[in-house]
Length: 551
Image 1 (tube, helix red, strand yellow):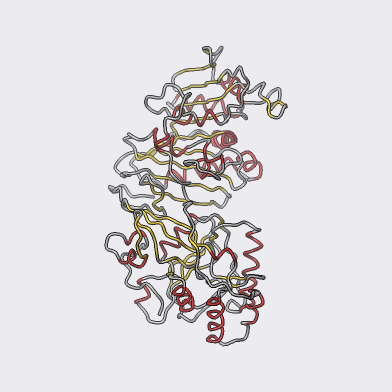
Image 2: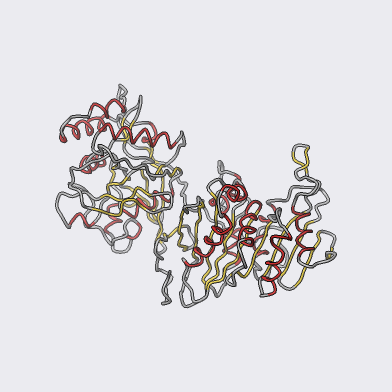
């Protein structure tokens, strides 16, 4: 909860992070009930003003990132270009007197109907999620709007079925999403909601005769045309208003529309893409949702939560022979500490790394109008070309390897940025027996690879990072560890300097970051950014760094 004191636009709320190019702060979470959400707070948040939260439930098969949308580019999945919920929300709320917030909610299995079938007490859990999202925001008064597309309508229906609609909810909008409307389950609560001032919106189209690959898409009683007819009847309407292009049922606070669709086209996503959310949210000046996109200038340049930039080559040597990383790990068993670290350093200097560590991936941070692009290895340091394995080591060894490649170890801020933008996030798998044994190092690596199941790309959630921090100045010969994020976004390991700098266990990892970064398009040394009086927030969350390496 946020206390009712003025909140300046530049203040980051607890748990939130700056993200995207629109001065927004984001919170990413996975609930115990396997629901992901991204909560976005617009610029100029002020707890002395009222707050309006739009909660949007994803359609079947779509991720949060696809639902939010991005500017298209070659190779990007087409799902990023069919809803543009973030851009439509920004356009609709651009001149608002409210603190504006958007939450996109997605079940892990990407299907709200399936999630509800598989989740005990799903209706109560949907209601609890809505209230939790509302409570996370600042504001003297907090109103909620619920919207969803396709299978996201099941989320809306679950909320309605969970009990009387809260007075904090001001609008419910189904965007071709009311398939499972039931007069028995929903009508009475929606009528009371409307009588108390709540707004009900449904957009649909005549889908009775549409075909895909020569077969009808909906059955004789299915589809949103028939569902909207049932909804209109249950809400007390008789015959619809009609014009050449659509049917409509209108009453104060209720707006139900169905496109006539004489050519029997599949218009399912077009209803959203062509300003459907703008219309459903009652955006000022939007009398019709059809036509060209009004929100194009509000589309982000890259998918929210992930930066897709050019990669950079990692200048490892190319050895003439190959190394078996798993056998190498087992060979370390029984060696003393110094001998083990010496062998690890020797093999890295030879360049015995797996192919995926020969490129740095691009990541991004933003703060105060500045943007930094930095390049990090997509995984933790590992050895082996035949069979490879991640290699826990002392931070001083990691530092010496970093020096070989003109690299630096990360800060806590950069670890979080990499986690947020990684393509593969895995649940931590803690082990309790023989934590400092190379055999356990290998066991952990194999568990991670089984969990990864062949997925490629930058990976997070599998190790604690050695980090650089000013706290290393508090005590000599210490190592700083941080991270190992749960899928909720929380960390197992807060920043700690409890261990001496020779301690290593299976959970420790070294991820290298290249020293050369770009700040506002200009090359800089990352170490200089970390120490700069103005730019340090791009790389640090504890002020300018005085300690930037392990000696």
